[in-house]
Length: 310
Ligand code: NAD
Ligand code: UD2
Image 1 (cartoon, rainbow, N blue to C red):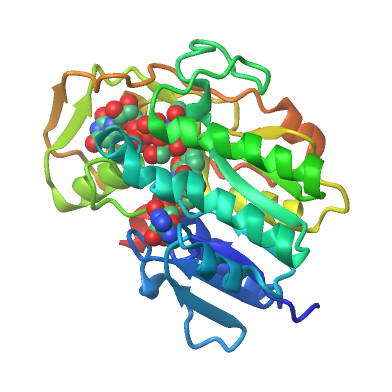
Image 2 (spheres, rainbow, N blue to C red):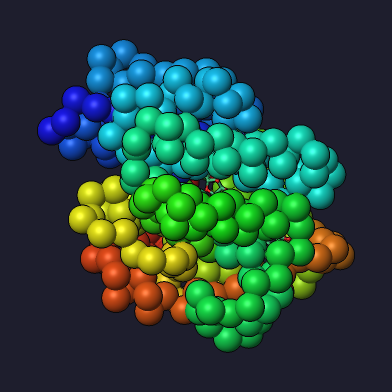
């Protein structure tokens, strides 16, 4: 096992901290760069000598350069993972969600680091492909600065591939859920909010009629894909959707949570969020063709693990 660490930007966050645990468990050295805007030190095994932690901003080119130097590869997860935050403040979220990616690309070019795994999002499709499974060739229609920054980052990664030999493995995550997904913001992942409020007996707000659907993917299943993308000899060209090609409505989700919690608090149906996507489901044939998929963690099992973390 090389002693050169794997850099995980955003590694103190929900997905990143699970990846840190998995890579350390496999004997890798790991380095995390995170500004703790959403991530937490408590998510990290900071006493592990094979883990280095740098608190700072991916928008700081000098810091990113230091963080990338000497690394074997990069998993670039750092971003403001809130669509609404990007709508409210596109200038500052752009620094994290796009300039951060450009800084990572530049630092990798300068230090000769080739492999980068990048977390893009189903948001790049906007409302295109609604109602049927969305494949990677579906026309892109980013509706928000968050989605636009994800798509722009994909294009820059491809430029650095063509021009400078970077090896980007780009995933378009649909809706990832699991332990450590922070429910503290009204714009946190819906499953983290619903489960926390169900456990605390607080009223649950549904924005819309609850028939909107998402393709939910348990975080534990994602880790195997991220590690394969780090280790595979050749990266897959282009972006790959991460989802199970299964549409679950919020009302179905609530029924599952209710049956696991022995009932639900009051559910309050409100107006749909402006620009909210009605139906989202991943055509995951490219994922199945290019990666070894772990057995899917069933929604109920994922919810059970999440509820037990509490
Ligand atoms: P998260 O908010 O838990 O993780 C993001 C991490 O990045 C946090 O730890 C945060 O502190 C850090 N961060 C934010 N801005 C930063 C900056 N400027 N400099 C350094 N660190 C910064 O959310 P997550 O769900 O773990 O998301 C990880 C990545 O996956 C993000 O890029 C997100 O856009 C993407 N993604 C997530 C989902 C999902 O359903 N969770 C879906 C699609 C894409
Ligand atoms: C989008 C992206 C996802 C990720 C995420 C980052 C799509 C399909 N998904 O997630 O890939 O990038 O943004 O933030 O583009 N809701 C409620 N009540 C609540 C909270 C949410 O009804 O308390 C609804 C919300 O209106 C939406 C659904 O739940 O209809 C999912 O919302 P979300 O914020 O969990 O995720 P989403 O799909 O916007």
